Image 1 (spheres, rainbow, N blue to C red):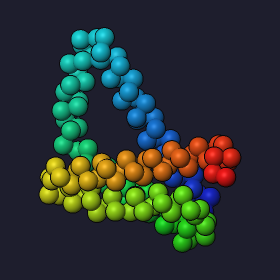
Image 2 (image 1 turned 135 degrees about the horizontal axis):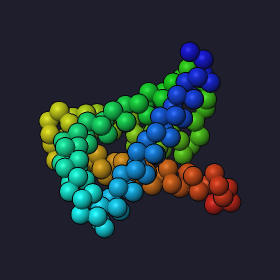
Image 3 (image 1 turned 180 degrees about the vertical axis):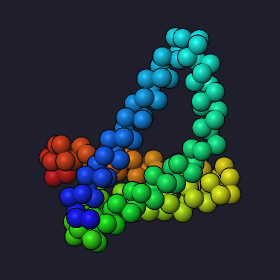
Length: 136
């Protein structure tokens, strides 16, 4: 596969993930006002609750594979903030994978803290890209 195909694949995965998050938010908001949707949503949430950590581990694994492909195979040089985000993302594969296998609440909390740190860096990175004067 060429770089363009792989980047398109990862871009489509990102759009799909964003659409799923948007759907969850919309259904959650609709459930606040509709008893029928609320009952259905509780059942769905209960069914998915045991799969959240394994799904998060898979997302971290795909993100790690994507970032390694783009830097090592496609030869895209990551910037300083990209590296900081990677420092937060790479350990998540092991932390969330172990949390899923061991069903450890402590590891879930560690994963949440590490993900929050990475998300904070990512938000700052997006702001710097949008408003370059923030970094000067």
